[in-house]
Every structure is written in C-alpha cells, then in structure tokens.
Length: 244
Image (cartoon, rainbow, N blue to C red; front, side, top):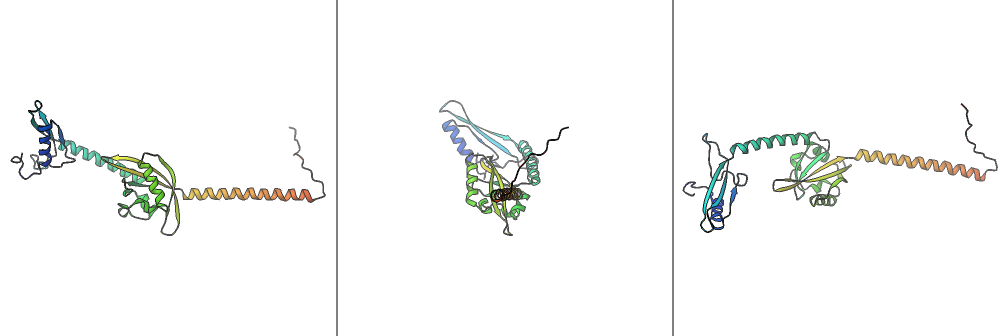
C-alpha cells in the first residue's frame, strides 16, 4: 500500500487492514469522513471521490484481506446539487417568514438567523452568528431553561419571552422551539413571534371592560343610595306590551 500510494496518509486504511486480518472485522472508509484519502484523480485530472471497503476473506485464523475502491464522484456531486437546492429552498422559506427564526447548536449558540431576526434584535446576521442566544433576552436564564427543555425532548410552544430594544422599549414574544438532527449533530430552531401589539390591545380591552364595570357599579350604587334616602315613591315597570 505504501509503495502504491507514496506520501499518502494511509493510517486509517492500515488500521482497518489489521482489524480485518486479525479480528475478521469489515470496515468502510467514506469520503465524508476521509476525503481524498488516496489522492486519486479521474482521466480528466479532476479529484476522484472514492470510498474504500475493507473486508476479510477466508476462514478464521487464515484471513486474507480485500480492499475495494469505489468511484462515488457522480453520486456525491448529485447529492451536493440536491443539497444546494434544498438549502436554497430552506433559505427562501427562512427569508420570507414574518417570524424571527434562530438556529441554535446544543450549547445555545446561534448558528443561523433570518432577516426578521435582524430586525427584531437590531443586529445583522453575521454578528448574531456564534453569539450565546440567552444574551438576547431580558430573562436569559428563562430562555436557557426553555432551550434545555427542548433538547430533552419537551415540546416548547407559545412560551412568552421578552427582548429589550436599543431605544429602551421591550418587545414581548411567543417562542416555539423544535429539535432536529443534522448528521451527527443536534440543533434546535426557535420561532419568535412579536405579540407586543396584541398584548397591548388585550390590556386596553381589559382596562376598558373594568372601567365600564366600575361605571355601572358606581351608577347602580348611586341609584340604590337615592332609593334608600329618598322619601319619594319609585316604581320600576316593564315596557308596555305591543300587540301585533
């Protein structure tokens, strides 16, 4: 092997060969984990993407070893094109969303953000990348607890969190967090909807209702007081009946 591929890092291959000869173990070295391991090229001189299969042949204790090199250049390039298309569609969905969207790693650090997140946090996407997400929220500890709960498998939907703007105002948000896998890594995506205006309208309506109820109570109390202290006769009669 060293004569066939001088100067190449053959360590992973030789380890797999020894395991096949000594223990009868099979191995597969993929281009994802071992890119361009043998430095092969196509007839056109382009890098040849390959996988290497190593497996024992023969009876126990008298193993020989078969090394099979497979050209997966076409398959890997097709997969790369499909992945680019999927990423393009994903980016289009992210950018068209009215909600702020953050993608976080297991530590809570921001790995991606959409344009709505830039507007909400008043920070450009490049500056958001790598930041601990808890720093963005008024109650950072509460946000970390929600993120940890999502990582443990809990469903996080419509939880209230808040952010402080540069002008000193506070925006109230509904957060939904979901967990997903990206290869060997785990990520979470947080969807943040600004509900400040809705909460403000609800508060105004509640205040109006309470004011009206208080006015009715005051008017009723005033009427009852007049009835108690007045010496005049008061009668409440039903409206006249109108026959058709």
